Length: 172
Image 1: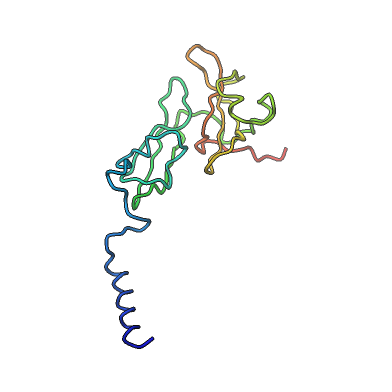
Image 2: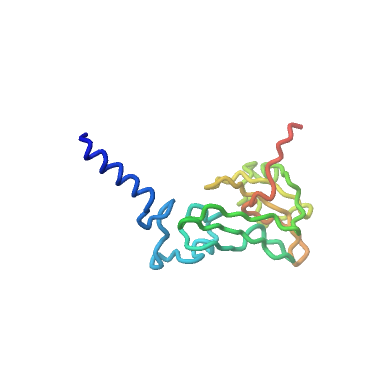
């Protein structure tokens, strides 16, 4: 390449680094017409977490288990460069479950450990919990917690563990 072309290429490369033309790292934020303005993705609770989805602003949404007598926890999602980069649902002070739990296998009639065989079914003791074997799209497993309903009955409440408890790793 002649000297003149290599100097031009060097100048263009330097300008692209020093004077960006409006594009943000990670991609531009979505337009207001996209329907993703504000916390639209955050309020869609069909997904476990809006991480990696388009956004315009940080947001919060209810998360965690629905336990009668307690407010649900809040998931905090951080929007950076038009994408939710992180969403966390801190374990609330009122949650009394252990940090580890067995898998739900022995609690399901077919041994599969899936939440569909436990959710809203009777359970033995309040705050008992188990980690389910349901497939998940992310890294946070589903699980179930034994809660007291307003009528006094104990039932399994199943959903995302929100990393409030993990599978028991003991080798006993």
